[in-house]
Image 1 (tube, helix red, strand yellow):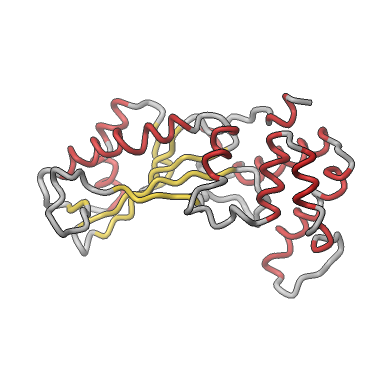
Image 2 (image 1 turned 90 degrees about the vertical axis):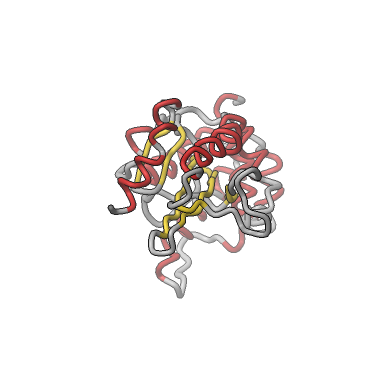
Length: 234
């Protein structure tokens, strides 16, 4: 049996009990609704080794990117076996031949991952969760920090964060690495509306970036385009 049907059968009880869970790839389960952020369960199956690992992923959808794709998210955590099943001194892998594994998998997802996903049900809560998280390598990256401030309507804070680095993002600059050019060019578009406090233009930028990241992917049919706090607080 290939991985996708095996994983779908394993996750069947979760789909039966939680209608906001959908499979968007053979090993990726998405938590809906999808607005400005993604919440995924990622099952990394290693059938030749007899086990799989489970991760949760949370990320924002409105960052500039090179192309549309189902991005798992750079902020993540690993789910382990329940202590009552984990053999002492072992790592708690989900082993396919363990008869206690299927029930424990469902129990652990419901106990650890779904409550986490429920707790980040707004953009404000998601950004508050992502900002200090130790598995967010972009937490101190000025463009990311700036964009989070913009999305929340924190324009003064965004200007303070962007001002020291905006000279690095100049329209017309040609990068040596052509693969990074498109994303760089998009970041360059941020300076003018941000420094002018043009909230309408900033909102158009964010909506455009979000749409380009979603449209054409398997995520599109579950995505709802909604206003940013930036717009609601204007």
